[in-house]
Length: 120
Image (cartoon, rainbow, N blue to C red; front, side, top):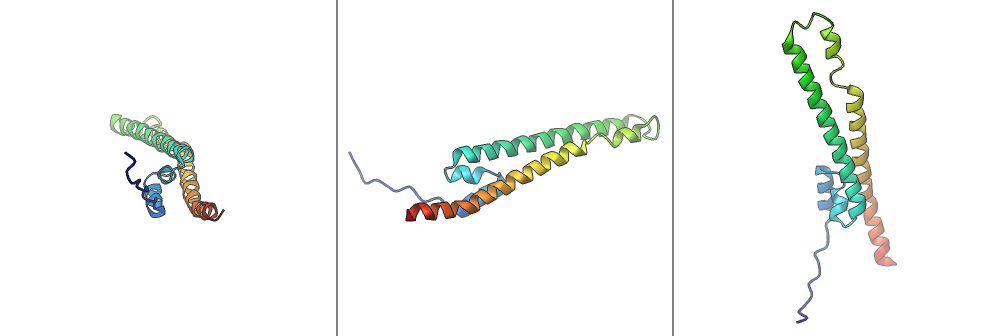
């Protein structure tokens, strides 16, 4: 019953980096760092979905204001300047970039940990 045991194929760091470019944190998940990768993926997705919702709500409001009346009447131009919530969009963008940088830095540190683990 005990047949020959097959060794699992070693995980590729290149594949992990490619996965991180698609979705930050997925490379850590692929390499077995489930908790760290999961936190990064979840944080990135929250930032991305929040940016998407804010943008789509702003775009909907923008289209409503532009198509409703003459935009030069009754302070519609002032309202158009505030529909996209630039501060929130930039904040979530910066958060996403930070998550991406942390994910890539985590992958760059990982080979050093793997090498020290093999020697020790």
